Length: 274
Image 1 (cartoon, rainbow, N blue to C red):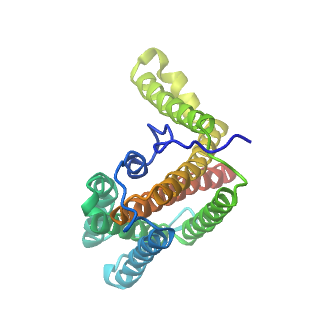
Image 2: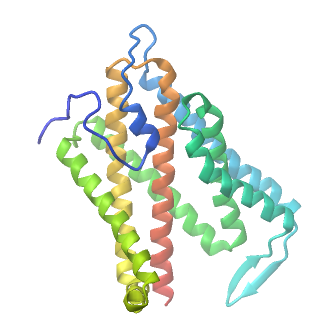
Image 3: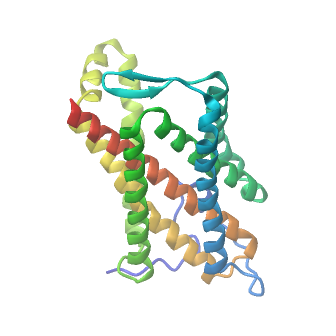
């Protein structure tokens, strides 16, 4: 199997994770106060604990929302109150804005924590609002994501799998292809002559599930790129201040994978019901 690229930036110029991508371009070194695996791990644990804090916040607020439980087609939904809608809207906005603010390195401890807390809050809220079955799907997605991350970390750090320039090129090609396909579908939906075809493709369960499965595979393999970049950051002696960037970058990738797994499970469940 080909060896890992020994260049500092690893030739990685594009990917799903802007924090890790910026980390791969850092040229600073500080041998006396450099990044360590222990420091990155502690900060990663901090972000994961903040996700749980977001879950806990929603649990605490459940009794205060006061939404009425409704039953529609054998599904139990909880009616959303005004205060609840505002809180969820703010959390959803945080999910969109905070990753961009986190590109400013010094903001990461706060902006990254807000992103993680919002993730936990929104997921917990969705599970409590849309019924027990949806909550079970969320928990299943969390378990699958945790297993995938642990397996990929084991494979990478034991040397079973290595990140080569060829793997990076394949991943980038897959990512670009999926983005272009989505863009073409959107453009096709706007053109009357192709709108019918696009609607048929979009409503095809096999294509939808296949597309979601592909995104899960891409997100999983990009974890290897994140691990490789973090390893180079430690071995190349990047200053300790970049531990926050590495930790949040990995947390961001894990959360992105979680949402992709959740999307796939949702489509599989919807297809089985239909």
